[in-house]
Image 1 (tube, rainbow, N blue to C red):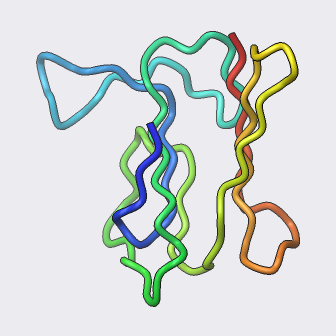
Image 2 (cartoon, rainbow, N blue to C red; image 1 turned 120 degrees about the vertical axis):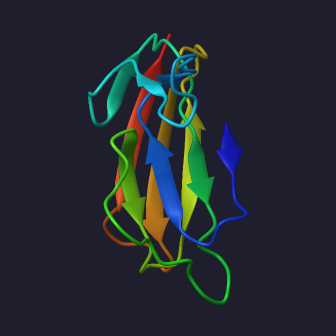
Length: 106
């Protein structure tokens, strides 16, 4: 699921709903970037095109794989020709070295 209202960048590990503690989702894979047929959902917030950032406070939740609140940027999404692999790359505005990259394969 891709969202963009919050003014920062965040990506979760694959997570599923935790009936015993709804505010603490179940992490189904801790691989930081490559997900082969993941169980659960990966949420990406790309709200880094705005005028100001929403700064992170406190410690990073355990279900967050990547986050940043200092650079403006955009997410490039590429799907393989056979439709089995999605690659997301978060670039800073103006290009340059990616700030995050992940792959989901089915």
